[in-house]
Length: 86
Image 1 (cartoon, rainbow, N blue to C red):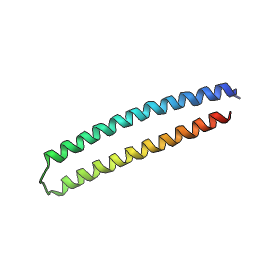
Image 2: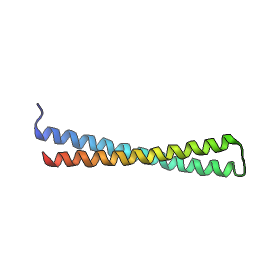
Image 3: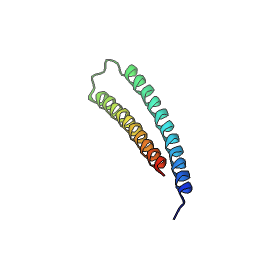
């Protein structure tokens, strides 16, 4: 069985990994936003259904990235809360 110090250390390591993942998700979100703007400018005025579908898919991806960030924030809070009780 791991000691309390080992468990706290493992939690800290996991939180660090989560934080790194959050940075990657945030970078992806920023790139996705840039892509949405580029696509909107390139396809301005087009009424083709594929254009709408592409924009809807990008919006969905953006929403899911936001949900991912929120979930990881909650995970960090819970992990840190548990570590504080040790």
